[in-house]
Image 1 (cartoon, helix red, strand yellow):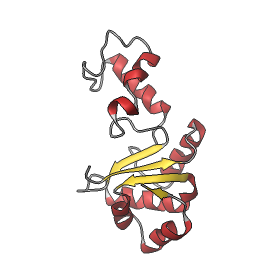
Image 2 (tube, one colour):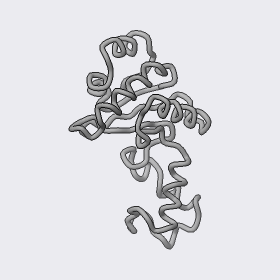
Image 3 (cartoon, helix red, strand yellow):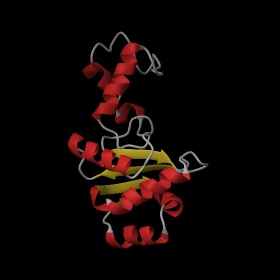
Amino acid sequence: MGGFTEIKLKDCSNENIEKQNQLLEDFGVARKYRFYSESDVIWEYEGFVKGTGSFPEHLFPKDKINSYEDFTKYWNTKSLGSLFCPEFGTLTFDCYFGRTSKRAMRNMGKYITDNHNEIEKVSGSFSTFMERGMTRLERQIINEESNIKNI
């Protein structure tokens, strides 16, 4: 699907996700680009309860969702796909047609280069991201020194 790109952490514990998200912030990556965690699901659930956001009735039957546990039966990667509900520890973005700014990609490139040992795998248009968001030296480091699986 276009330039959809996923980056998955090795350690997907809440503590490590928080740590990596703080590092993304330290590298100047815009807030909308963070590794997905349970706090994101809680935020979605709170939106569902308040009636904010978009939760189509055929996907989120209000009469069957009475708790956070009920909500997670419907709000999960298997039900919605990784585009809407990534696995915990996954950062997703689209690197085509300016959907992710050059600055955001550049800052993510710096983060990835410095923290490649924290990343298990990448998928989607990661090679396009590398061309647009990383310097030649950073691409060389990733290609030669990292153990990131590109699937």
